[in-house]
Length: 313
Image 1 (tube, rainbow, N blue to C red):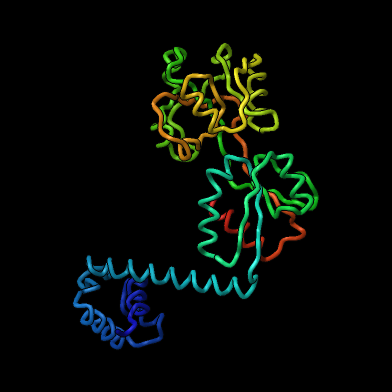
Image 2 (image 1 turned 120 degrees about the vertical axis):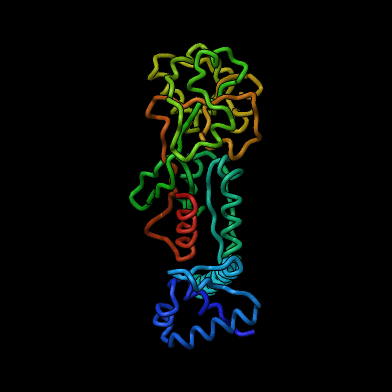
């Protein structure tokens, strides 16, 4: 079978035989004959020549979709061999919180490994303080955390901005008073990124409610305490926990109110026993950073940095 894909794709891309012939440095009659041979070989019509610009038939749409898959594979092959020549084999390590190590990074790094299987990866899950020490000692190559690293040799690249919300047991009577502010699990899941349809509420409305807090070394603990302080009260903390997902499930069971990430519905089981509230305090917005030593970035490290930035920003 002759390889017609470059010619067919050029006509599709340019929208005309004359423009495609010019871009390919061939004559228009020769290109038209070549496309007809392709159509005859497959027994289909690829282009509808009665429209201006020419359009694809239904068979042509399928043909182009398959061409684009082939082109993507060829691009990935070229990228793989190019990277192999430049960086060879190696190992990279990345540190982050339990939430990212368990729920976010595995799928992201799996995609990286599929593209660059010659590079091995490892994850280190621990507290921010511990990870900073490991990064400064060069025991890990990079870390993802909510705080920017303040060190002259290190750079913190902002990946995205997230919002901290309240998860409130659906059985709590306070929800009746605040119905106009509350999101169900399905409603929060359906919200576009940073585009919310309901107003934020003051956390002061929840001053008399029992809270579930993360441990003191967690950034959300620090922000949560300050948010409550800004509203003029000290929260009644019923339980301290190590993981946000645990806080979520305990809130679903009615144990108390928890501070959670707005992206939590992507990573936990659906529940109709929980409601979510946005908060008015400015501290609910925070950046997530990728930190690394800028003065000592290897080609291998730069490859992973670029990949993570492209996937998460």
